[in-house]
Image (cartoon, rainbow, N blue to C red; front, top):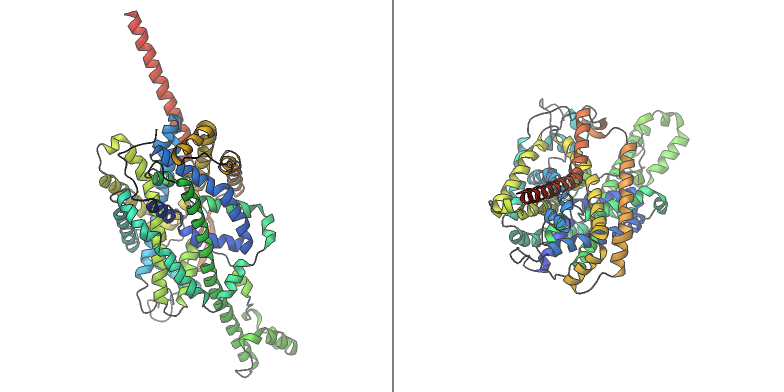
Length: 600
């Protein structure tokens, strides 16, 4: 079992490694990991993160590569080959990857939108636009910030809630079309074209990150951000959520459970050394997260210091004007001294300042944690607009986001296409180009829903509920299947057949004991957290307030969330039940034919 001479293969092992790196190193490394560091004790978060990498990430990554390389099939075929009742595990992976394909490319469309708007003398998110009467700035922008206004109004043209629908944003729709056209060109010839593309998508983001690191650490105040990152708050290690988030980040960052790793490995030569590659890719992925965090926190430091000093300057001017002091009396360095001094010497006049006197706190600025699109398209954009030659840094940044997003999209789409192309009734009537084109077209047409005025709320729903629950369940079933149904001894013999040596004690202990226990813990924590969370909520943009407000999902949206959570997971028991009934009917048919033959 497992050897298929006609199957396409990577030109060399380096292509496979780069494909895995391009897939695993994605947007989460840039916008999720820094957020978790910020939330859970800075440098102290690295302790649970690296521990979970060793206990959970590397063993499961290794297992999926081994399955794909041994079976030389996509996720559906690979699990069906292990047991006919387990075809649903692969089907669940395909459904989950399809959900991801639907919304993930929308992020690439946003990146294209920002990239195209970066070629202007003044970045459009650097200042508020003038209103239609030419008498001042747009009120919504003044209530928010220019970067928020550009994202929510110009980019998304967002509605006030998920219940307020609207037409398609044509600019975003065209950007989404462009994103899917590029994805199709990347995969048009299957693994042969993908193998060439990953040389670029896996390496160029590192070049941009290095350039950004050099620029970032030279920015005024960058050191404040870097010191904040590496200053550990060890008390956070006593918080169970810190460990859960570390495990979850490792789990999703490596792309476990989607079927992409099984698909990639299925194009390896049978005796390829996947063990070494699993360790290398896992280490590269985690190292990139830490490296990207240094870059991010240097930008954080610059932005926080800029905001802090701007606040001090406003306070300085307020004190100078209120107390009629000479211009050079108060500086940024002694503002706090003068606040205390004036409060002591002129208490009544100082009290009249009331709410006009701001509290400036650098630590509070650094503590402001943002993740996801808020970090990528608002916080970064706000920092970029204050840099010299901001257009150059904007172009570089959004090209990097595009390549990270496109690299991950290759894995997402291949996770869908490979199992489908393995099905005989599809491969018999469709060429690779046709199948790839139909999958991309299908995802594009459904993805247009995310470009409507309420589309961002549906995007958030898919992002929050489309994969987390199902992936935890899928990978838990995978590791239990390999160790306790297929059997750890059979798995060990398969590894020996491919690599020439058996599993060492580390792989056995992790796969048979530690990893399943951690997965069960994560699964239980997710369910308890979901139940305790009450009615699901989302962040709705309120243009009157110029900020997002927490809003409950309406009943039909809650029902859709339930459908998202259950749809992929249900594939596993339903497929097993279908296989059982099919076998039972076949057996019954054979018995009837035997009885009729004897009677005759």
